[in-house]
Image (tube, rainbow, N blue to C red; front, side, top):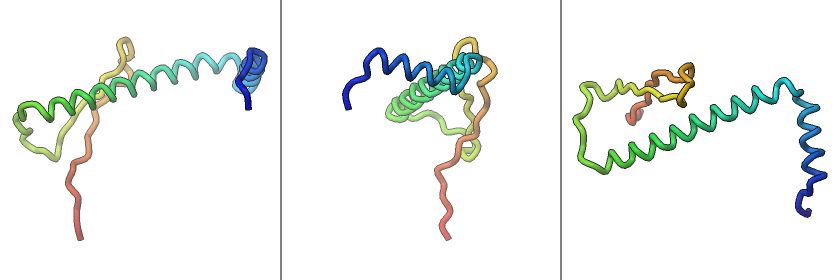
Length: 94
């Protein structure tokens, strides 16, 4: 299998437009962009949490089972930020 040339790329794009329609493509691209921004912000938050864990320990919350955090939306996208209840690290053994 060789590389894709300009003819093959154009043919693939035409097939995509025929399958999904020209009206749905901008919505799909917008959704993909939002998903990418959320993934990027979550990855950044996880990195910063990892750095915070290695730094000086912070005061523990009053009830560690109820830790709430808000996922920050991308700038200008206020509809996707929501409070999240994270699972605890406790496991039950029977």
